[in-house]
Image 1: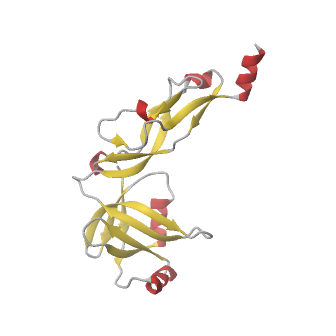
Image 2: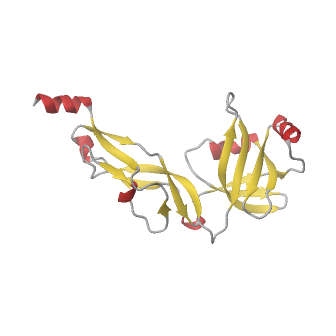
Image 3: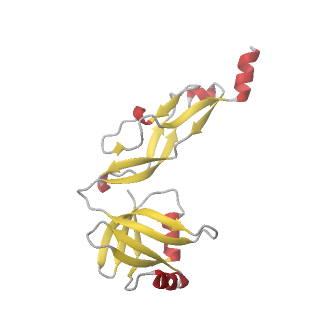
Length: 189
């Protein structure tokens, strides 16, 4: 899994007034949970661009004045009108404890059902994965070559050795649907 380095400054003042002052300085207030005491800190707004606005998922190496810590981004809050980042929650991780993250799904191969006139539809773009930080994948690659028309791949069809998928077994990841043109050609013959 890729690691993203982020530099932050510990905040002394917390509360509504202090948070507004932080945002006026083009900074984003953040909180780090999971490592004993909660740590309130702030990061530059522009430093978050490559962490948030990307399809990739990262482990975050948070460099604070008191030392560096490994964490994952748990929750992010955006302004409802401007979409500006208002607040981020991070969760500290260690190498012995499994962590749950949403990992992107990537399909490979050319489905047999697409060659027969169907259309491949990827329904689930991310899956919840539980793994140790060292075993966490960058993406879940799923081969769709054997999918026929009307067939689908569900979570129960996937098997991985280093991690578990937390989604329900009946969740459909990808399927090949029959197109209107193929249905019309079928009924005409």
